[in-house]
Image (tube, rainbow, N blue to C red):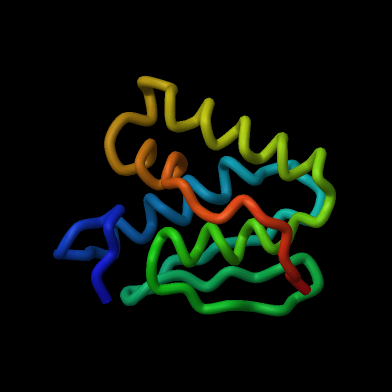
Length: 110
């Protein structure tokens, strides 16, 4: 499946970088999920153990955002994504993975 953040060729290394980025941005937030990389995408596991398979970075962020129901935590996550993307140490794919604009809505994550 094509992914605007990764380009036409997807590698396991890219998937690992995206998973590490999402996990780093979410670390310490209440209700944070865990993201695991696979060769064809990611598995996002919510705090209660429910999981979602995601095939694009945008789909992954949509699933992750669904884990956070508190507006103040969502705002902290938004600020963390922006700061992570803006940090020169995260240039390249990590910045694209963190800064990709996804839905900013609350969802349902078990």
